[in-house]
Amino acid sequence: TSVSAYSFNPARIAFLKHYSWKKFAIINHAAEFFASTARDLRGRAKLANLEVLASETFTNEIDYHISRIKDSKARIIIALAYPKDILSVICAAYKQNLYGSKYVWLLPGWFYSNWMFQNYNKDNLNCSINEILEVLDGYLAFKGVNLPNIKEPRLCGYTPEQFLTEYKNFGNDTHLTGAFPYAYDAIWSIALGLNTTDHILRKNYGRSLADFNYKDTLTRSIFQEALNNVSFIGVSGKIKFEDGNRIGNVRCMQYQKAYYINYTIQVGFYDVFNDNITINESAVVWKGKSVPADQITMRILDIGIGSRIFILFAVVAGIGIIFVLAVITFNVSKRSSRIVKITSPRINVLMLIGCIYCYVAVILFGLDWSIIRRDIVKYTCTIAAWVLSIGFTLGFGSLFWKTWRIYSIYRNKFPKKVKQISANGEVETIYRVLVCRSANMPIWLGISYGYKFLLMIFGAFLAWETRHVHIPELNDSKLIATSIYNVALLATVGVILHEFTYAEPHISYSLVASFILFATTITTCIIFLPIIKGFIRNKQSISNNSNGIRSRTGIPGTKESCKMTTETEDVDLLKEELKRHKLIIAEMRSFLLSKGIPYTQMKCNKIEAEA
Image (cartoon, rainbow, N blue to C red):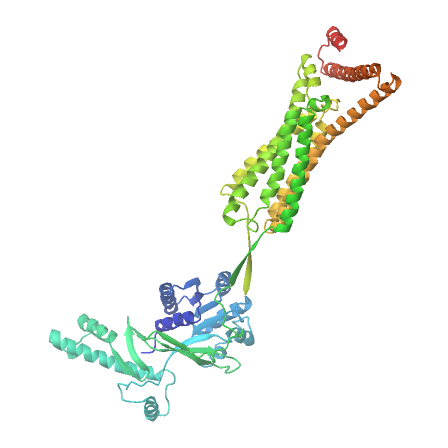
């Protein structure tokens, strides 16, 4: 009639709930006695809405099982095993640092006094006794009540004091210690069970216990049922059985090395019949001076890019947009000028629109949950990716389109294309980071990176093929090669750094935004600043020539001087055009001869005459 191992599980559950511990781990020996107790404990935990983070059963390799408990991040650990095996578990816990103010160990309470010293064997354990005690200090245990002080009269008629006196006076001087009240109550339980069985047999079957034999299954089943229904007040407390196991009140014990090094002291009491636990909080000692938590307290801190960094790059992107708009205005307003016209102003505008998309993408990438609402972030994230992709395609696609036109003209054998050339131009803080990801991210990245890589390879091919074109207004091959080099280098480095720094949003955004801004701005300047510079230089040259002629002809303010000035400007413009036409024809002639194409002198002379 000692309290069964199952009876301690309700006390364990009540103790966990008392301190609001909702998560714990179990490690038990493979012996059925402990394995069945662990199964029952898991079932009761599930009914009580408690979570078992890990449940390990061992016979050997204890270090491995302790490591799994450590990986589960459990702080409350229940161990079920014999004393010798418990010391092996405790030693493994010491090696893996599963002790101290953050951890609570719950062990069986039926161990005898001084058990840790009696079962310690330095040859079998790789820990000193002091290391073992360091882990054991503060452990909690649950054990039955031998001689409780209760008000109800006991069936035997003895008070606890009277029972002890009678026990000491019984027989010789050798007496059992510890569980003898349970043995006494067991005799009473058997007697009551047999008495009930005899009554049932006489009443229902016309038989008695005197007719029992070992093949009599009827008497056996009646006795088992009667014993399971036995209920009385014994010297060890209230006697009651459940599925053949005696249930009884439980004492909550704690091992406090500084107070009593050999055993545990009582710090609480669990009334199993009323499912009520009482803890003497003043008697409980915690290493950390406060009740340990059953898990790491997660404090989630959202990390964003930050308004300062966003504003900085947004302003720079805004300046870039203004600069590109100014270049677009120049291309549109000066599209009739020969220097601008020959560079294909419509394609230029398309390329510049792509640059604007890239600048806008910088702003969109910076709109995270620290700036806008969280439900909008996923949309801005998607839009930013598409805007950047479209901007890259428009920018470099247009740039390579220009080069393709030059390439297609110069590989053509018909001289009429030349005219078109001249005309066009313990608390643990968890930092949460917002990362743009999709379900098929690798596929999309592969497609996006793949076709952009092919686009840049094709651009490099066109730049190489048109490298022999020496007309400044047409030959962008060196500029394109420089742009490809800059963008390829920055894109490669940017993608790699982004993958390594996405956990730091402000760093990741700063790097990506810087690369986008730098690549877009440098490409725009490389392609369009020479055009603007050439336009200004040509305009100044014409102005200087006109001023020289004006100084040698006529008297300012007269009718003849105005007429002379107009005619001189027209002649000067025609001379400039004639000079450039001759350069184009000469360039075309050398190109045809280098390709082995028959050159018709007469047609070229005709072209020169027309020029």
